[in-house]
Length: 336
Image 1 (cartoon, rainbow, N blue to C red):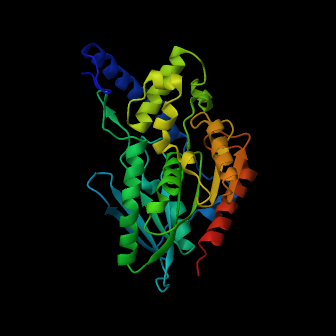
Image 2: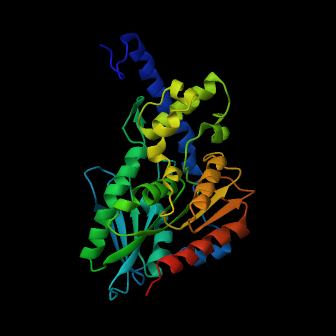
Image 3: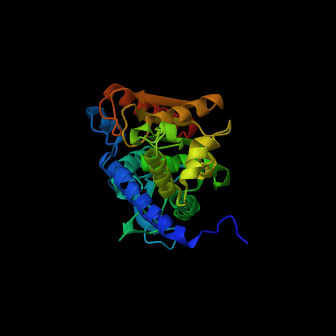
């Protein structure tokens, strides 16, 4: 009797080679994202970036939330410890899902802490391979690690004397993608209400026609195979070429497609995307924008017409995006 998941012996070798190709595609394309991490460099950026000092508060490093080597977080506690409740802002690091570290966002988290928020930077197990063998990490496993980390972050803050009553989750690039998965998919299970999500250039859905920057929109075998490879690596499960061709891959990719989980109850959102992004497909961000609009979510979406993944060529719009983040923090998580 043949089951749905049975594989003929002669096909096993081909599937193994397909997995190796998927890993290689993932490393090549999304590893580039690490080099394109968004950096605020204009003169006005100092308003949203602060060097850490003990005058801001207390910084606790490398607190564990799981058994994995990467399962650690940093906790930023503001100087004022007299309030009855605090808002928490989790900021997830960039790096194309393959690199990066929570320490890279220290100035952003220090700024948030200086405003009176408890801040947290969370590491997650990065996608890697050795001799063509994956370590098992994927966007799916990374999202699950973030979900597991949030209660531990809140517990640690409360143990230090900072009760948390609401939170925002944010990030850049890969971190933005993971933040949106938590905000739209997992917020109902959060220990406290998720009242805001913000960030930039994170992929929110996986329609191959949107991924034209990789050529996945073409009706060719190479396009079908490329989409199957990179989507398989990101999901952490094999997506077949047949599923790409018949469209059934869309439902398979839903667990990491944050835009698919947007409802009228989704948290307010601030997001920015560059129209010339060669890492994260810009067209996918339009589906995110449309889902927010159709569901009546309070959002601000910034389109940078001259910029790529680094949002580097539209200084005025980049500043509007930063100001909108500050505005929405004050609106939905006022420090009182």
